[in-house]
Image 1 (tube, rainbow over the protein chains, first blue to last red):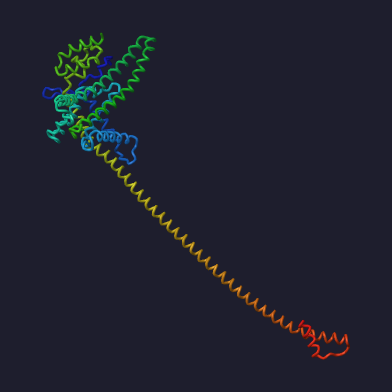
Image 2 (cartoon, each protein chain N blue to C red):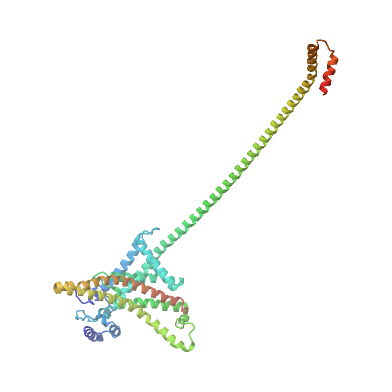
Length: 250
Length: 205
């Protein structure tokens, strides 16, 4: 393995596929997307197969994640927002599983690719726009006109609202991507220090203890970040969906 | 110096890359702070390597689409069903419990009622028995008293009889005694009429 901290984000073709001159190869990223779906769906499917009234521990985990997202969505977007539950639940479980799988050494982190997180963010914002215009027609544009703003300030406020709306897919995708990327690079850099310092003999091994401790601590932090970023993505999705369900309520 | 060198290298390599990524790549260049050795094909920071974007998007659409379908068609109805049935079960059990509690309360009330009735009945029986006993006792006493009174009055009449008879006898005894006394003292006889008159005169005193 290379000591290059960006090596872990390299994409390698496993099965080259080319359609119409465009490269659609099955890569290691694709493999880990499949693994993410397999792990998440498999866990949820197998743990709930008993359908026990009294849940086993693993069944409780599935139920807790269900209720966690359900209450998040109900608080964020109200009971009308519950029709988006499959979407928010899928997003949360997919991102969480992808982040956690990425914590395994030598595993590829699906969410460390900007195109993946951007696609997920565009999916969210696209849903908000489509549903908003489908449900409220042009009334959806009230989203950009907050209540009780004096007429003179209106152009300024509306342009700020539009800009903030347009920046949502960027902030949503970059937040997840950058957190995963930076975390994995930091881990790799500190772990690399351990390896390179211990090459300098006894003194180096003594010096390597610090970055080793740092690596251990960062690993713990990264597990937190893996969960937290999935949570943040889901919470923001709920908030944006609230705009689609109730425009002009903020 | 580490970073600036990397930045220089980064900016030269990204210039050749897709113009769309260039600003984004510039934003996060500090994270790529370790120099590229040019060991990967395009030399672009891997997450921004647009050559794989189409493949990534396709496979993300396939895998996430499949995941979404699995979630919305299988997993969510299943977990929702489990939670629903548990909720129903708990509600049913609570209903059953409250129904049973109602029954228990009714049974307790009936029991209390029976107990109160029994107490009242027992009380009245005791009362009646006491009244009965009291009545009988007073009747007995009255009977005994009446008999006693009868006996007393009979005894009194007998005493009165005996007394009057005795009193009547006193005159005869006194005459006999007086006759005997006179005979002894005087040696003569006195007529019965004289004696009777004398006795009567002394009795009169």
